Image (tube, rainbow, N blue to C red):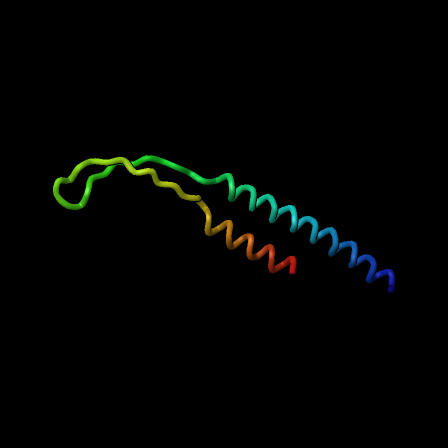
Amino acid sequence: MTKEILKQYRFYKKRISVLNRKIENLQREEDESVVKDTVQGSHKEFPYTMGHTTISGCPGLWETHSELRELREVRA
């Protein structure tokens, strides 16, 4: 092994650890970012009774997934 290869090895090892941390942070944010709310609406057909429905979702989910995919590709 030459000195240049050893320098590259250290650089890539550090870069992989940074990428792993970023991936872990994004996954943690994804798990914590669920938003819930209650909405009011009626049935489509007669007797048109009112009801409440709980909806939930993850804002920015597609951006997080695409960023995670890109980071994993770079890491590989």
